[in-house]
Figure (cartoon, one colour):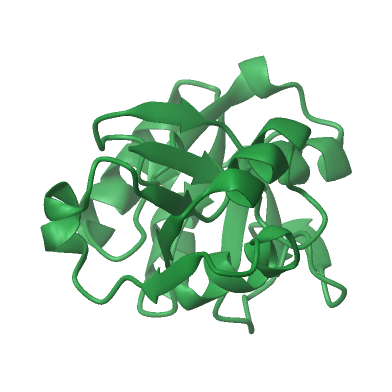
Length: 194
């Protein structure tokens, strides 16, 4: 099995990923991942949308599995096989905001673990790290902001990064006293002193 990161948006596939997609005979992925890879999928390749992520271990050995962003950032990199990394939303956000990756702590609260994500975010901010928080539309951003405001009197910057890598990409920055609020379903937060 080959797990390929298709990047966080169109135009972010690596040459290695494009080559592997081009010679694949069977590809699985989310609708979004397939859409990003579609221009490079060869005619005759069987393409299937992943409906049950719990059954991925049952895929055939020759399967190519597409993962949005990079498979090792809250993606499908846990699957057995070869991993071809992609350009992650983390990399794009750090580049857009000019933040060295070594200063960032990643917290995942996407699809699971919202309370744990809040706790980890608070801990990392207290340690002086800049947090990159992968969240989802159900994540309670207002509650996180309330907890961050109560945490310290020192100023914190917040960046809401929406639709990174897409033509409607938007990054809004502000202070914790008047933080920006995400409006898109596809978003992440950068929190700290940057």
